Picture (cartoon, one colour):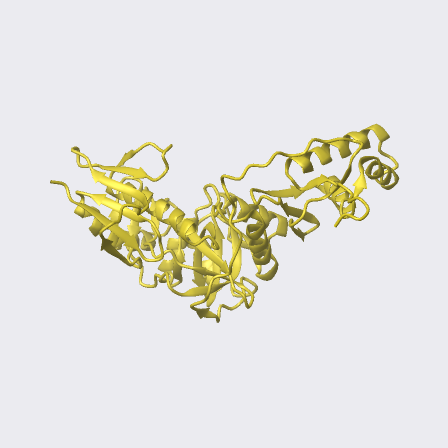
Length: 413
């Protein structure tokens, strides 16, 4: 008779069910060394975030809590990779205040640096090269970030062994290849998990000291670090955020605080080994010192209600318009970013839309906006301005950034 083990991981509300595959318990203990869990007897209303059972072919059938997701058959390493994804999502469901970024987090020369993921940027290989050279690893995949009531943003490790994609790239050093071979703990044709000496735990938080975007290109002769544009960094971090249950206003505020308060750079490089050596010696301006490591209380944030639906108002040129209440706005490098009232999305305004947005600070009619814009841009055809204002107001209404202003009647409270 098959035996099902129900595991409760520390800090999570849901359980993981593992049926008739004790070898996966060994893999969990190896690959997730900083995750504490216990075996429990579930009650009737316990939520199961992931279920794994062994097939007759020796593979592992993986089910998630999503009723629209079909079960997938994996080998052992891929099953653990899928489990890590579900545990990451469950952390966000269990702790709604957390921001989660697809990024590596590495303590480098006493500074905690985030490396957001990018397509073919080589994030994991660079993380391995940095760890090989003595850096401390918090994560090479996803990073949980929280805001402190006393100021600053803090990140914690994911408690998982780092991994590299196989085959290893040709441009890493032979010493690093040998080191990775010797430290392999679990692998298949796609990935290798390897052990490290300085893997951070999940219980302490580290103040974020800097952010570095990776730009990997064979044309870069030598590694080069240049200041990043704030808008460029905002876009990168928004794309790498997957804490979708958090109100977009809180996400925008957290990312905006990150970009405004820590040094931001772009690393241009060709070889991970060369880049790691360069970063180890690039002490000037890379990040602010991380001298504040501590356990801390979470900051309360708003949660987005996925079941909530809104009906945007229709554009009417005879109506008066104003900004919707409780919006979040940040302005960086001349760009305006807005979160809508519902908390579903973040919007970036171009120069024309920003000018119209400024006029909407007080109730204003469509024709008043057109008149002001015509004075501000006398060289632009009046019909073109009318069309642009119409398009902008329609977009603002669809995004719930503005609404039709209804003046209160005399004596109405």
